[in-house]
Image (cartoon, rainbow, N blue to C red; front, side):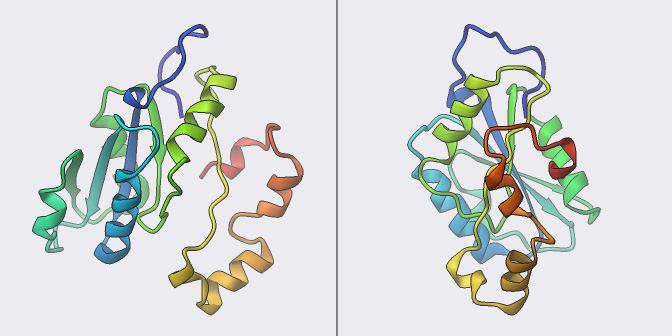
Length: 170
């Protein structure tokens, strides 16, 4: 998601990007996600973790992670947490991840490439998300993938690179 008016001549860099991750009591998978962000092929982005609920004990290790800013809010849901994280940065590009989205090492570079190809301020990039192997074995994620009721990636794959409508950007 691009905020403001990007320059059509300037290439986007990781320093232009803030990653916002809402979380609620899922520390183990969040650690994996943050560890995967640490080894990205494009360093320099900002990571903001928004803890959804002041009723949680946030692990000290999370608060002490380099290059990760931790914010907290009353329990109000992931959408409100994303908005809090987005409002806490001045960077023009936002990338929203779930706390269980363990990215490949090329996530940042691929995301920036898409914004370079489509530099308009009203462009959002939606990437394919596959279940982490530890989660994929459960029945509900397998059904969600098979039924296309959550992401409908089959339709997205068929229209790769095209406008797939704002309704998919939830």
